[in-house]
Image (cartoon, rainbow, N blue to C red):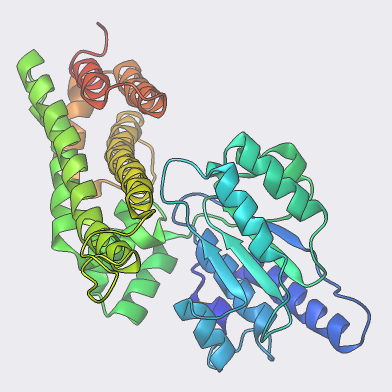
Length: 393
């Protein structure tokens, strides 16, 4: 079993990466230079495994056997402790030029244990324009043993100057059968639950695991998919919008509370709060207040991003529901991701036209655009729910 065996439904991409890792190792062993592309762009729909593919490639580059999956090198990469692999995860809504310049400086160092110094940049599309320009310079003239692995939903999400200097690895949406098999064999999920989770998440491996293993996640999805049936008047539309926004805020609070507390406690320790002894006091030393303010800003930005992502996922679940309504209206023989809501799908299909369904989908997509433009979430979602209730208004 190799590191690439964990990639669900990505056999073609895995084969490309395996060949590249082997070619690089052979070139170095033969003294013919690096023999490696120094910048790679991993693209694919959400949940396809962009980060997992990049991490597997990093392990293959550093492993003596090109990703055996059981040596110390592979293990260190998988747990995030390998000194030659740095993984960058933007915490806020964007990644600044200051952060990028610091990253480029760290990338200039030589590898300490392996053949390469690997910089794995998740969500590289969140880099600001200035940050992308700073990253471009590092990709154009990288140190001889540094490899950049960038992850983004599609090539078009990266500026063309970066995209043109990267070798693109395109991942596809895994099939329902592939994800269900993964859940059964790796997580001991019952077959029926595995099939439900795989179908409901439309090829998103991470969400499928959470849906199969966490009852609270299933409850939240059920609440979102019951929303169309509850829209019977303006008051109900306002209430439904409030519930959606509130649930997103609660998800963000749940995801960040413990992490924020740990980060704050650690920073206070670094700046000496509570220290005793001659010349020390129990407050933060000089510079501590500024560092604490920077941390609070970062935590606030992260919470905003998580809240936005949670709300966006709820909207995508609604899009899937209305897409299934449209399939029922046309009698299409396709897999329905919301098959478990068959009664609601049939009722809405009978009581509305395909044109109404398309207008509802447009209303949801418009809401997503407004949220991305920083429109007040409550206002944007209220406008959407009213359009879902009366699509012809």
